[in-house]
Length: 113
Length: 109
Image (cartoon, rainbow over all chains, first blue to last red):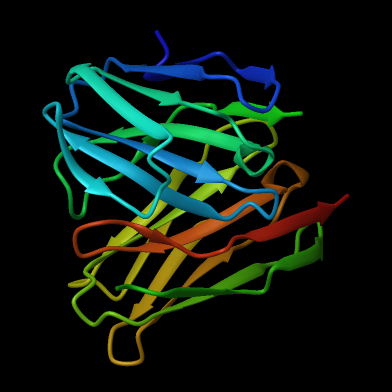
């Protein structure tokens, strides 16, 4: 009964490929996020969805496309993978923006070779 | 936008000592300040948070203090234990959380 679960945990792929990461939360939260954590552990927000609607889209290449089929799911699709995309990607959820704790998944380690 | 500075980047202490991690923020509108602990191979987990109408909050061995005038807040861990070893992140928000760059805490037995 994991609160925020994301799959796969590890993803190794070659440059130029397209891959997806799936995320689901069972906390009943309205807002979901994708964060990228680089090799120096810096956490940077990529996207935020509220009730399936995109509300935050930071400066992220348009090769990254989030999709939210319902408010419990937020998937991340990445086209034409590049070496620099290698990182750990975290899904998170919370009640509406502002002053609500984030609940993170355990991350997907993406390695692009 | 908000900018959060966190120090130190690494902190080594002996078991039983206290550990203090400090953060400063730039946006005076920020009113929510959580702290997260990230263990190896896991996602960050909330350990304590404080809102702008409170100056201090304590939960067992962990305490957080907030100085809104100076725009800084700190995490205090007393009687550290080896299982406290992890990366700790501060964050600040009015609407969207902005994280500090993390502090790797190592507690030696």
